[in-house]
Length: 530
Image 1 (cartoon, rainbow, N blue to C red):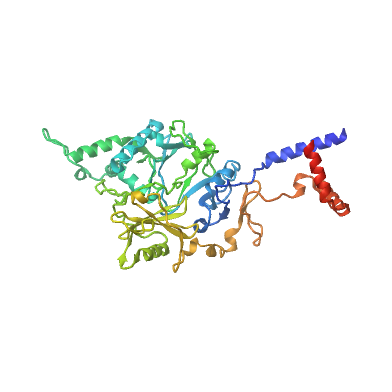
Image 2: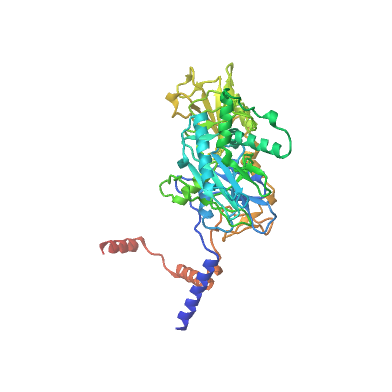
């Protein structure tokens, strides 16, 4: 009876320890997935460089920690699937997580919406969100010919009693923007009427005369110009976007400051440090994520919420070449697609100029002066895709196309390049992969560079409970995954049992005579006959 009580007590102690430090299984990629990656960096630039050097799909995320300097972040490099595996388990250490939107990366259209509730008691947040989605969909149809609705928009909510806060992520059908700078230009352009109204109100409040800046009212019997009618209609339609800040000043419902290079954008299920308001699916959300086989509904929402989770295959790339603060949409927006390239983007130099030089070397030979028409970077697959002008050699037909141009695709993971085609007959063709010769890849995306990182850049580790802490010693090798290969025996409380078992096994092996093959075969036959 006493032994039973002791064993029961040990079981209860283990159960309590598991509750305090929950265990999670090691992340094991499926057969069709790449190997796992989990590495922490103190600086964003190092994390981005390492992610670009990884042979498997890897992305950068920013982590905020409690009880640290405000604004201090640690940068994690891992895959989407591995992050989700631990993200749903370590809800404390990974609860303040942000997606880093890389410079130049093809991305989705997204919005950050907020207003101060006590200063806008009459505001109906849900109605404002719906009106904005409808207005953006109308502009996507008018400008790019893309049909979408509220069912294409993932609507996330992290509102509190004092603040209305939403994230909108447009999951368009086979279309995405060249990068978040072009997203910002598009958003600025379509919201320009609202910005103009704010500017006039601000000038009026400051006592400046703005009568000369406004279009004079039409006299009796005089019809207004079409441009004037449209401006008044747009400004009236966008009046719902005007909100008041904490200090009582007028502002916009839309945050226009989230379209910058390497922007950190808060993730689904994450909150700001010191806050307890994580993003969840809004009650008025009408978007339904398409779950792949073996994937949970929550994981499909997580993947749909990622701004740069955009595949290269079949994507139409949207662009806006007008200035960010243009007074009206007078400049024609430029857009292209993977199957139709008609206009120059004006952005012929990618962030990796060494790769640009190599591509130009490939398309400038035999007296033909090919050039880069435009480039697009797909962060989800680590691909730089170059649309080529004035060079149409196709490996598929072994000749130059008469009218359709080609693409040069650079795979930064495998450090190879290959050719694809805009011609309909070659749409599914991909040439063999070729290594880089005579033109090295940029230093920051090469393994040789990563191996030279200072030890201080590898001094963060995540322990078995998901806690992120500085490494205790400089010479300590950081773990690349969350869970160790094995646990110390004393953690389980069975150290003596294990030692006794190993000693018995060793004694048996030393004392036992060799068993003959004939005896083994006889035992097998007897077993099968039963």
